[in-house]
Length: 357
Image (cartoon, rainbow, N blue to C red; front, side):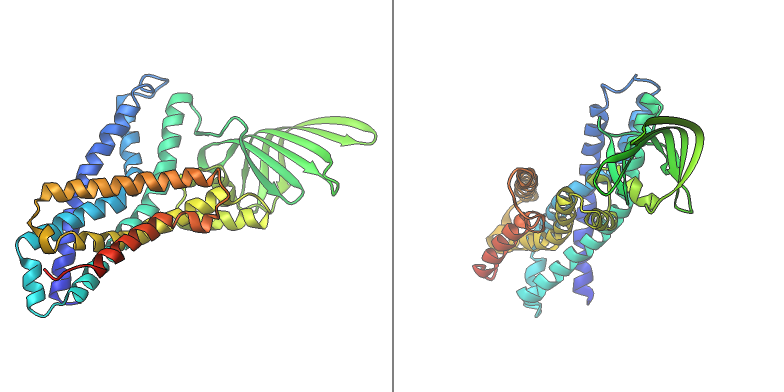
């Protein structure tokens, strides 16, 4: 890396940060307005709605990072091209290929910085934000769907209705089955948790046992049972895929596969997340192509408009394809990379027909 590489990276970084602030402001406003129906419910007021919107901000920005970098690159490189700084670089022996490598490197570095920090910041904050809002509205932490969430523990099938504080669980039902998949016992606990010794701590437990002699019912205030489940993995299982970072997604997918459970939704989310990181340097190259030659005479407003159109088209196509994957039988390992492949192809075509400015 030389001075020119650093100069290009700093220019793209500064423009991207400015664009990011604009997107952040719009996202905060939209998130706050969307809370209008919830304000006044329970103890959820205006101050809580502002807190919730701020905690959701990193997650909201993560969805638009590729678009933000694209527009930032268009503005930075467009200004450099308009001021003939790119031509000066190339006239001093900095070939277009070398310039492309520098821009690609800048895009890769931005992808690592924003996506890496965003992954570890947005996921826990989004989970906490949802718990914060639900707690203030209903005095519980995180509600599940009406049917709760399901996990498997050897010969037990466990339904968890919602997550409470400190990774404990509320309204837990445990179905114990035999080798013929016949139910042997149903246990219902008002609350439960997994301790550091991999043991279920069950409170207010009612048990129904089924045998050849009939049905027997028991009740106990407190009971401990051994489990092979990992406490953190159980917590992940009651979390939406959008609220997991890539490492958590990978761990949870392994858990689902080991227990012969459906993985398509989480695999699709995992590969879509990777594709969103990988497309960032490609979009930076696309911005370079649109900032040289005759395009350098265009104003910043025009380039921002083009960036918005391309970014919006990418965002819509990505979400449309992901929704379609739930209907059509398309492998998750493929579906998330279709927009990436399309944008890469367009960028390659533009580079192949490029004329030296």
